[in-house]
Image 1 (cartoon, rainbow, N blue to C red):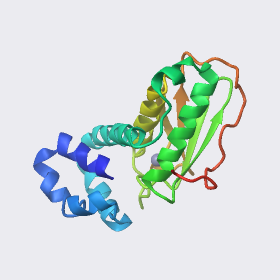
Image 2 (cartoon, rainbow, N blue to C red; image 1 turned 45 degrees about the vertical axis):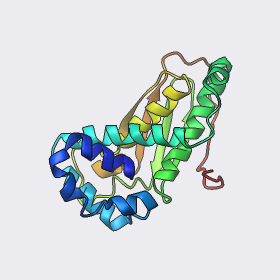
Image 3 (cartoon, helix red, strand yellow; image 1 turned 90 degrees about the horizontal axis):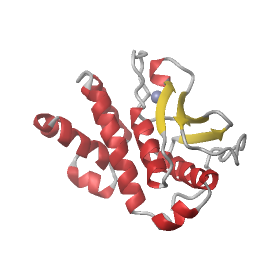
Image 4 (cartoon, helix red, strand yellow; image 1 turned 135 degrees about the horizontal axis):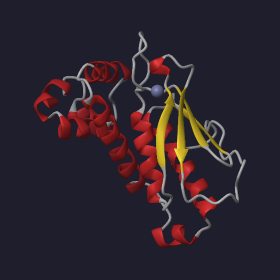
Amino acid sequence: MASLHQAIADQLPDRLEFYENWLHPERLRHGTIGLAPLAAVLSFLRQEGTVYQVIMHRAGTYAADWTLAGHRVPAYGIVRALPGGLRRRLALGAARRLVRRCHRESRATIRVRRHATTVAIRGSVFCAVREPVALPLCGFYAAAITRVLGAYGVAAAARTDQCRGAGAPACVLSVDTPDRDTSSADATVACTGSEESDR
Ligand SMILES: [Zn+2]
């Protein structure tokens, strides 16, 4: 959740000290921020208005960049030489792992079909609210997925179609990849990912 801290620092620098009551820099460094402090931060952020969406977008982008920087991503030239369908599969696999890394209870199920790729997220840490809200809360994932695919040379735009926070049964994102080929059409590339290590 260091990405969330950085996004708040960017967008609400005057409020950072307030949020650091829960996002202690020391604990962030050690990855020991618990769910309760995070829930408090998200609750206050939702009350900040439209900047919530901007912060989530930035945080998702940072999370993608930092995750990719810390893991074995194949060299860009090699990735670019792969067929589009395979590149997309690799990228979606990386996106799925990123969802799990953000919160161990979260799982992404990715389906690639001829005309639409969808990412269903169970246990989104951002979307657990008591009362439904008007706007989707999982822009973090949309931004992160878009960024990860971009790093693999897959032009993509992910958007939230349904959000548990807005009363839907699950969070569902659709991923538009305008230049996609159809070689892997109708393949289901991933199940829950629960069998897979993050590393
Ligand atoms: Zn959601």
